[in-house]
Length: 218
Image (cartoon, rainbow, N blue to C red; front, side, top):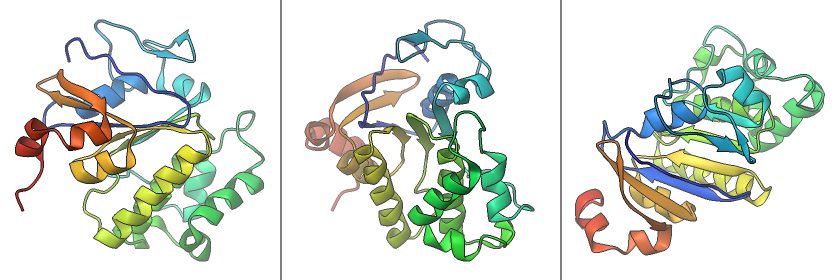
């Protein structure tokens, strides 16, 4: 990545879009402490967090929901959520898990089921719920709609908007450019490790350059 500078504000949804291999996932991993930083800095709430271990980044209020979900398949839903609970930062487990179940009722119905038995959409809900167990101020989502049916995608996008209304900042990488632009306030377009375009999402969605390259022809 080269000369990429992004910023988020409380309660703002920011999208990062671009072709495969552009560096989007690397950007997210750098912020969350999962990739080595060779230059530049990451600041969160005016504190430099560059190079911190991932667990230290989470403790400061940043949660990362990775591409591919990466839930613990052999554990139950509730065990997955328990594994992400942070005593001292999060509410007591019972209170925290009920908040997740209120957001995703299907998870409560199947709380004792192994995660491996969930559908793809339900696994994505669990992955997001697990990230939210840390009660983050910034939630990072990598391809949350990947491989999901349109109805489930809409549900996930609605959850993102609800989180923003609660004051949580959301940074989302998404191949579905139209969906990403529709739910985000601001967006960055990345190609080959560089930011080639940025601006308010509604404005970018209407930009001819973006539409020609990233949006399907109708």
